Amino acid sequence: MKNNLDDAFNITPTEVEVDDTPENGCAPRKDQLTDVSNVGINRPDRFTKDDITKDYEYTRGNLYSIIEKGQEAINGILELAQDSEMPRAYEVAGQLIKSVSDATDKLMDLQKKLKDVEEETQQKGPSTVNNALFVGSTAELAKLLKNGTKEQNK
Image (cartoon, rainbow, N blue to C red; front, side, top):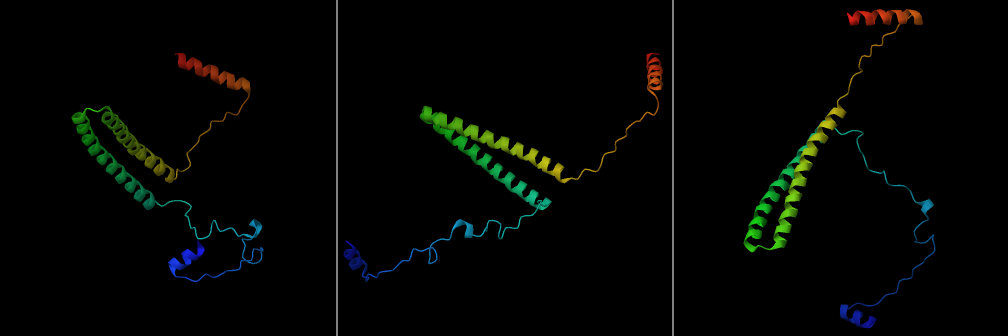
């Protein structure tokens, strides 16, 4: 059969000698391999506001497109289901309606995620904490509290 293929492709057979020793052509051991997993990857520590806005607009546009096409498909499948009165057509219409409603939910979740990301990127300044400190004995504190409750009852 080998000769038939050689004749069919009009080639002359050649023999290649393969050396399978580790030094001459086989793959090196795992401990000899170098780690290249992080080579050439430059990821910023944080995304810029422009990146976040661009991603948000892109995702939002895709979701709008999916919802619009889904609504067109729903209208078409409902017409088909009414004309054919087949249960499978109604089943497909129900699944399509669920898919479109899921895409609408994702659009609302996208709004919430953008708000969360914007709040995260805004740096909150230190808040002022005022602690009241009483310097005195416990008897004086009890007396002060007693006088304070009498004034509140009046």
